[in-house]
Length: 250
Image 1 (cartoon, rainbow, N blue to C red):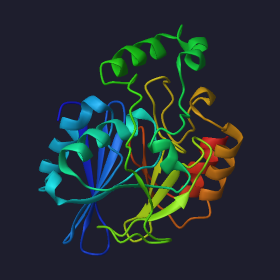
Image 2: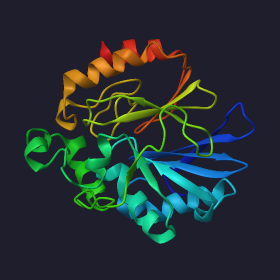
Image 3: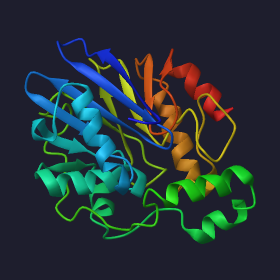
Image 4: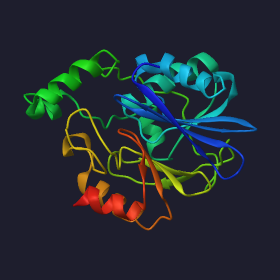
């Protein structure tokens, strides 16, 4: 896959956590003897890249037992929507976010939010590149469902949702890898095409539905016993999550 890398971690239970890092957004594949759980799915026009990442780790879309959404922005559900339509697996989200996934409402930065930033060369280039990936697509996943249970989910990899609102009202992170790895979505990232900053950080305020709530949610993540962060944008972070949170909120 051009512009993509896959980092594989042992999940501590006989399975694997595959972190797929691309130039513009990431997704995660949880794989064990029972099949695959997909967390997020990139932009609409990245669906083929998602399928290619599954093949690269020795799986296929037929192995997907369910998909999870961190939040319902187009760069996280676009490819997932197309893939679910092709292969018919269920898509789950936080009980609040599921209405966003279905597009009963939309909490996503639009032209008016980004206009004050568009003069910046990095932002202009990013907008050009993501427009080719389907950033303007407003489609949702009509049959998305709320998590089937509280706590650890009955899906491959046994992910456990951790509510992390702010970036969107129902944004969720997920503990995987026997609880020591956090899929952080867009609450806490490590890089983004709109900035030269690298390392733990929060997205520009234009991208958050509620910046103050996102910061409070990120602060709460510092209490988790996590030493690997798999963000929605940027490379994986290896180290105590408290250090990442302190850097991001500084």
